[in-house]
Image (tube, rainbow, N blue to C red; front, side, top):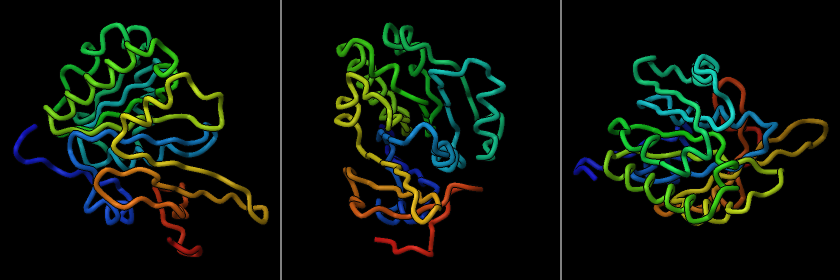
Length: 212
């Protein structure tokens, strides 16, 4: 890891404050969220100020992938997108993350198909990703789907993570309520009671509700 050891803003001021300024270089963030939520808004905010490598395990069209990150305002020259074939990645993760741009954000969306592969290969890929993040002063956000059958190796993902963000949604009085929890953070305070957020044009703290 380089001597600069930068910190990456999450794009959410309250999270940055709780984490002492943001996510340190070399760290892995796991975001668990329902598949029918606007969770991509969170990693759009996270990636908005940094060179970004966006790898999708589901979509293959590069124009579609670029459109997903368009709201973040990342300059085209700072955005690399690609389809991540789960089998190919587990066979040769170096091909996908072996040449990361320095001080970049790596998004894998979602990781569920990787978590369903062989445990040894998946663990090796996580360890390689961690090494490359540290070498390049980068961070990763792994998007995990919740409210679906849990993949075989989800616990391995959560164990390897430095930070876990958990997005949950409920209906209260006929209105959709979105709450973000931080049950794990290696460098900052956890947020056990959650913070109410609105995922519309960016991520907004819902000031009409109490913030723990």
